[in-house]
Amino acid sequence: MSKLVRVLLIFGSVIGLMALAGTALAQRLPRNQTQPLGGVIAIGELTEPDGTIQTVDLRAGERNNQQGGNLRFYCPKMGYYNGAVRSVSIRNGTANLSGGGALTKPDGSRERVTFTMTVTLADKHVTVNVQDKDGQTYTMDGNLNPGFVVIQVLSPVS
Image (cartoon, rainbow, N blue to C red):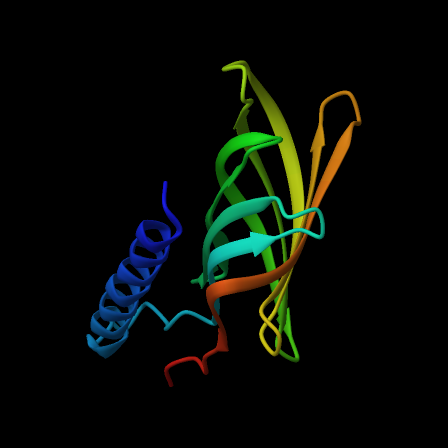
């Protein structure tokens, strides 16, 4: 896939997410619900020091004291991952997340993995540590460029 097509896909996704997020937050919530307490969006290309380019798509947050979301990434070395975010913490412009799901390897085989992830707003830095059931690990580390990162903590509705 050409770099221009990837960039257009990324920015199209970002614009769509921003429109959806704005519409959702603008609507009045029922009295028994609160606004999301925090959220993280990180979409873009991560280039590792060896030149390998990975595509990262993260959307996670908290609503009504339940944390969740989705992480997807594609890495030529590791394969394609699509799985759940199970925990999110946000502090001083940095989000720490963890979860698990299925990794489809380049050869087509699938395996269950877990991950921990750190996203930093200031420099769009992303670190993803992936571990399989046998304890083997792989780390993706770098800045999203091009990329889009939003880390936001919202006040509850009073």
